[in-house]
Image 1 (cartoon, helix red, strand yellow):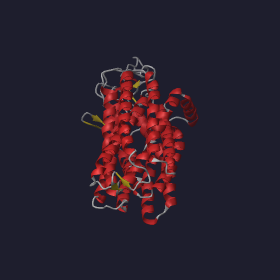
Image 2: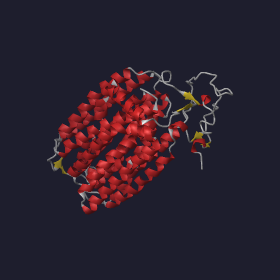
Image 3: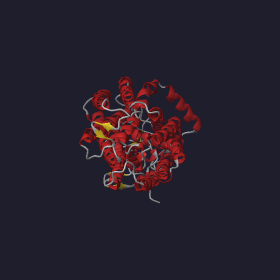
Image 4: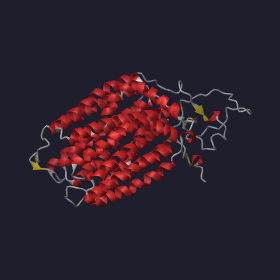
Amino acid sequence: MVNLAATKVGPVRYNSPWTQVTILGFVTFCSVGMFSAVSGLGAGGTQDTQLSDTANGVLYGCFAIAGFFAGSVNNMLGPRMTLSIGSTGYSLYIGALWAYQVHGTRWFLILAGALLGCTASLLWAAQGSIMMSYPLEKDKGRSFSLFWSIFQMGTLVGAAIALGIQAHSTMPGVSTGVYLAFMIIMLTAIVTSWLLLPPHLVVRGDGTVVELQDAISPAQEFKELWHLLKDWRMIALFPMFFSSNYFYSYQGAITTALFNGRTRALVSLLTGLGSIIGSIIIGQITDSLPFSRRKRALLATAFVAFFNCAIWACGLGFQVQFTRADTVVRGVAVPWDWTAGVAVGPIILMMAYYIADAMFQGLAYYTMSSLTNEPFKLARMAGYYKGVQSAGAAVSFAMDAVKTAYLGEHLVSWLLLLLSLPLCAWVLWGIRDSNYEVEKVTHVEDVSDGAIEGMALPPGHVAGEHLNDGGVKTKPVVNEGSATSD
């Protein structure tokens, strides 16, 4: 059997954080990315906005409940098993959309939404733990950029599939061929998850092992979860987490109302591209500016606040021009085709919304990852984040399901974003430039070669070099500031 942790091609190690985050990105490329492409079509590609809102409300409601415990499940099962289980719900949900399109089975779509809410919470807890804990501190922003770009490439490819199938159709809905193509791609994520390595086999570029302990006991895990929920920083970040997906229902609703099927596919493609752009911007700000970590983080917060204000202000200027009841917007009957001149500005606006969204999500992840480097803690934080995030999404989809005015949805979404950022800055004000000195860090030099299973190591590092013949550490653990980024 191939020892993947020992695999090395040139300077690239299979057990490096960058390789693992890349594989993680492809897992979500095939699962969440495809799901995002369908969501970007508006109403899941159907024309029944109320049913879509109900299914999404159930999905995010279950996600919210399961999310609080998902990090603990990840810590007990390990990231590979958790990620594989978490990938199963996406193909089921797309299958339910297909069944509704063909047979009109509404109940199955709602049930699939509930199951997806539970499984997705597991996927995102494992994702958060890997993406935030595996890289070096100096690479955490760019780790988000790498992951988010690959993940959103799934949205791009999915949208391109939908656009290719729908390009010559002016029908308001989406064909069943779109759902079948997505479902096949999503099923591959279940297997791809097992290509990831457990944290005790991953070695950073500075020679530190991510985590020697592969799992944690249930009793200890739930004790630690309770401590997390009482942490003032998690309480302060609650508004940020709650608002981080709140606006999706509003944006999905106006996409459905304004555009026909093929134009919604184009919007989905462009919003995926916008997300990639936003993730790269926030990663560069948090990692590349020549300042201390605290200063970089606060500058990133200020930039995200400014950009969101600018985009949502433009959105407000557009939103006051129409209501839910309008069948004609800007003098042209809806739904619009992309050939309509009036559609160009709103399409660009939707792309800009997703640039802002990616930067906001990146800031949230960077804030959590700046508090600790420990995988178990970050898995709990990721689960908490996604749980609170999904609670916000469930509320917003419930509001949209009862036909809340678009203007009201817009203003609430914008207000929540604005209120959350000062609290985020408060948390970031207290972060350290490094957590290495206060958290236990294990170098490969302090671990016997047998204990790390002959895994590939970064240049200049030798397993057990700090141990004498009796297996006793003879040199102190020192974290090198000039570590490489592999």
